[in-house]
Image 1 (tube, protein in one colour):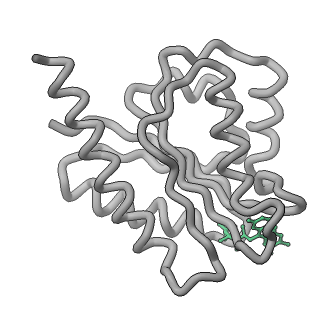
Image 2 (spheres, helix red, strand yellow; image 1 turned 45 degrees about the vertical axis):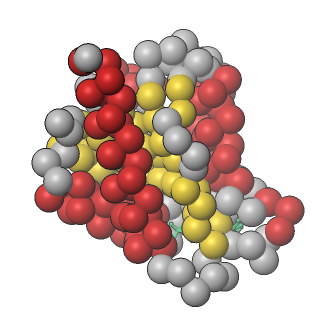
Length: 159
Ligand SMILES: Cc1cc2nc3c(=O)[nH]c(=O)nc-3n(C[C@H](O)[C@H](O)[C@H](O)COP(=O)(O)O)c2cc1C
């Protein structure tokens, strides 16, 4: 059935962007239209786009969102738009050696979007840079299952 997925990318050293690019390719092959949007200079108006949103963000500082996501995150926190019409998923990248703040970048976005009324679809995907797992492999496998779930919900809604 497919549709549009907008991946909003928060990254410092590019891992989250590689994950997003690989998801764009994999879901594109399954018929999805996937837009990849870096969070730099992003405003809340991005949520006026058609489709579902996928937050793909790493973690920096002391459990903060990356620098390129900071302006977007803080602006949302301040203006608190009603995002009741938004459905989203989360891919949170982190490193478990930062045990007190592990994957908090993605978690912060998740908490904020929920507070603003948006609905998360499925559990978040979490990647640990200290594990043997490759971020883009984990991300693509998770995203395929997640997109399948979006499809099922659409099919249910059409019943
Ligand atoms: C200076 C620095 C601070 C970091 N702080 C955290 C942190 O607080 N919590 C966490 O889970 N990961 C932290 N990380 C790990 C990154 O989030 C992780 O390596 C991620 O895969 C990087 O993705 P990116 O290349 O998209 O920025 C930190 C990494 C660096 C270099």
